[in-house]
Image 1: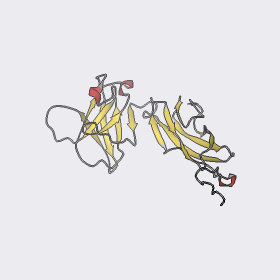
Image 2 (image 1 turned 90 degrees about the horizontal axis):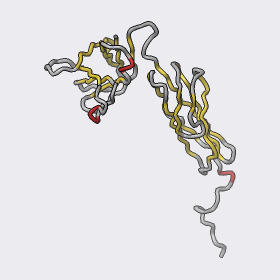
Image 3 (image 1 turned 120 degrees about the vertical axis):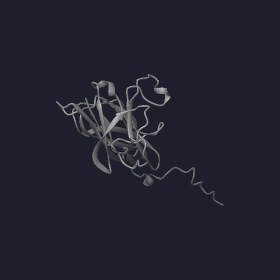
Image 4 (image 1 turned 90 degrees about the vertical axis):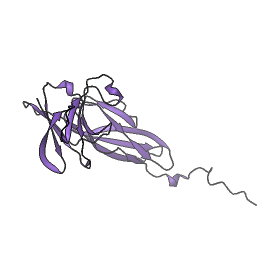
Length: 209
């Protein structure tokens, strides 16, 4: 009898080379003064014979540096205000390619000439209470007035500085000045604590100085 070839060890016939699928990740944003972001790429391929992956900018502001364009995960530096689109191209040994694009919005919270900052589309974090974090607050002058706007309510609510006096306020804020942030918070960030339970939205924060 003729010995059957084990299909698991036999090489893929050429005709079974499928183009790779590239995944550039979900659209996201960073808020100045942060001017660095991380691109996180991925791919699937049959058979798994990827030769190279390359990031390039296809639209957006002129200033940017892709640290490792040939790497699936890379940082992008020197970002300017605006919307960038970065395209990931994955090429296999047979020369077939897959492409995908991610949009990155670099957001400037301060309008030129104004004395207020608006941080939009923030996400809830849970170090202790339901909280919103605004980073790098020491890069702006003090004193501050802090307001929050919720997805389900267009009104801005003023937020008072955290105090030990009992109150019925739903929100309080504090600024982390301890270098280690008690292991929970980030030095230089402003936190708004929310004592309610509805955290289904992406709130906005306005800071006046």
